[in-house]
Length: 292
Ligand SMILES: Cc1cc2nc3c(=O)[nH]c(=O)nc-3n(C[C@H](O)[C@H](O)[C@H](O)COP(=O)(O)OP(=O)(O)OC[C@H]3O[C@@H](n4cnc5c(N)ncnc54)[C@H](O)[C@@H]3O)c2cc1C
Image (cartoon, rainbow, N blue to C red; front, side, top):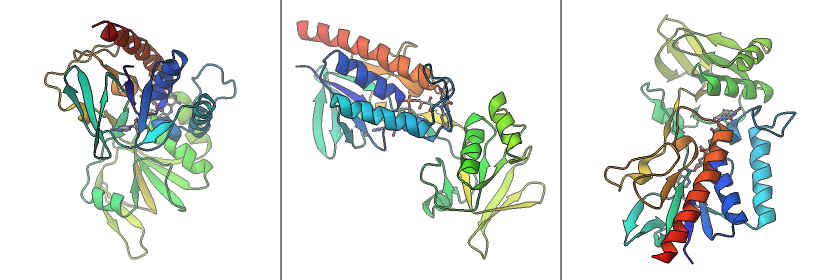
């Protein structure tokens, strides 16, 4: 029986898995971190139908994991590094072993963009700088770099975790209204129109962020939220790869869903819709595949 691979267990991959399960189509779902994807970081998802009180990203992810458990869907926790065409099928290497699939739904989402200052990688390795907040150590305060929705969402979550946040952005911040209101009502400090000159560790093992106006912002950790880019690296083996807006591609049998398809329009509902739609495309593709 032909088999589908879903790469990623964020909202798009979750929706794809639920739809394939409903249709009784064999599939594997592979995830490199944890169920929920970047939605795990969301403070409150207010725009999902059916949740009158809103739902936190953590709770959304927990419920998806429960739903998988109830339906007997097992997630394989590994990284898919590349996908190759192999005699009308697709070959991936997981844990050093070659595995073949007949169609692939790539729901690999996005990765954070680096802030770009000297020493950023070293601070990340020393666990002084983070791109997500789910694994933050116990600290007193944190400085979030970025001026969009994700930066403000992180700052509000940090505040609720008992950490004193500060937001640093190089221009005027531009979050949606309710995030700005919540930031203001929690009296979270925003330093706007400021660039980072350098970051250095001080004698107290804290970070000094030296700003272009000459002032220094001291902080325990930095959280970078300056944007995200699509995780398309694993598709690097395909020459002249074209993606169509509905998630189909010029490679028959490869489908994209979620943020990877529209990285500048990141929404849980869109990702869920995409996951469902490309599962139907993949099912139709497999039906024709069997006839060949
Ligand atoms: C702080 C924050 C707040 C947000 N708030 C909201 C909100 O209120 N409302 C809203 O609609 N949206 C919100 N979003 C956006 C929303 O989380 C995303 O749009 C959504 O998660 C996208 O789903 P996805 O499945 O496409 O990608 P992701 O959620 O990014 O999932 C992709 C998954 O693929 C995995 N993966 C990637 N590469 C590989 C690989 N090579 N092998 C195996 N696994 C791989 C990743 O580990 C990840 O789990 C928020 C995002 C953040 C960060």
